[in-house]
Length: 276
Image (cartoon, rainbow, N blue to C red; front, top):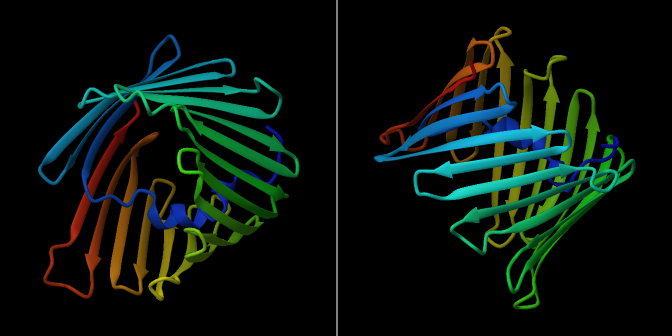
């Protein structure tokens, strides 16, 4: 793929990932392994509250084609086929889930040195169409996305955003929810590996006149251990500890506490991901 501004979904993604990735409130166990034929196998089990679920997945890569199949405990089969460079500088993604015959979707991503374009179409009798585009460079990006529902002839969404990126920092502003919300975020990395950093995000919803301000950070204690924390103006405090117990195998413990309601029990999450 060409070096360029990236996809519209990348705008603000670094800040969002630091504030949300690996924060969990359930218990999850997963095991991944690679077979001699080049197939990556994954098995996972999740317990949330009193409910348990699980899935088994397989990923096979051959040249520029990637096939991802997943079967869960509710007998749903999700399949994703990704092909790179059917046409130069493109990525084509086809996905569907059985037995839901209306879940099929085809997405085509086009990358250029100064632009990107994504179009996704749901494979139904009255399809919905999502289109997004960006222009700029890896340093400065401006973009927009829109969704159209053919059955009603209405726009289901329209969003616009801008991002300024530097090697050690990134700032973005996104106007979403059909103009009802605006989100501004800034992330600054504190080391070359980008494991330690600080982030701030403010979101305003115009219809309710509500503001949400969140600050967070991550710190690499050493090459194997990472701690993260976040706090918003509504009193929600989150903390996370992640440790690499063996190469590529992680144990993650997280907790969330409502500081304005200390009588409530905090939420705890535990995840163990093994990659032998």
